[in-house]
Image 1: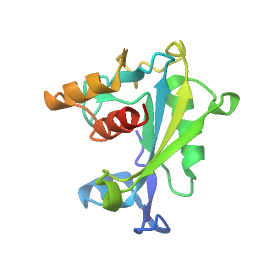
Image 2 (image 1 turned 180 degrees about the vertical axis):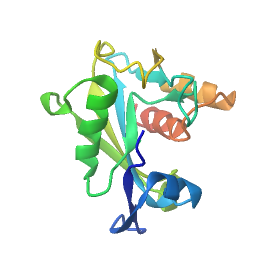
Image 3 (image 1 turned 60 degrees about the vertical axis):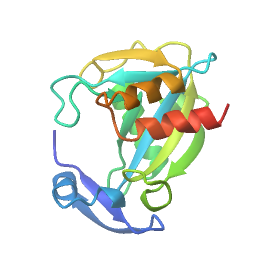
Image 4 (image 1 turned 30 degrees about the horizontal axis):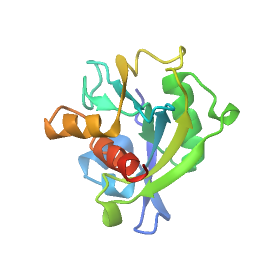
Length: 170
């Protein structure tokens, strides 16, 4: 995977400069980057949760969201979400009714970085998903995700934020 460029933002989410992903992680600048998270929810209120393949460098075999990724330099949140959904799920989000749900920030919410949450309601996992990004998937209720987090199972740090968000929205 190439070392993509990521925008560095200030506390108001205004772009200041750009650095390579490796530089950002090496210098612990992740609170100043942007990312996107697609929640796929079914009518029963379950969220689609995926397990990352074992070959992934970051969190191999860990739980993750349906489509999650960094916003590249010069990209808007929505552009990044469309790109990530295409790469990871093989779907074109512009053909669906997608809701922007919430923006989390490091300094207000304790989030890993600035990240925008989008929601798509589907009843099944898209058959076009990329097995290089998704090893397994399952539908879980938000409280089940929090139970996994309490057991300290490997997962993206933002997954409990998402689960709590959906518990609050009931």
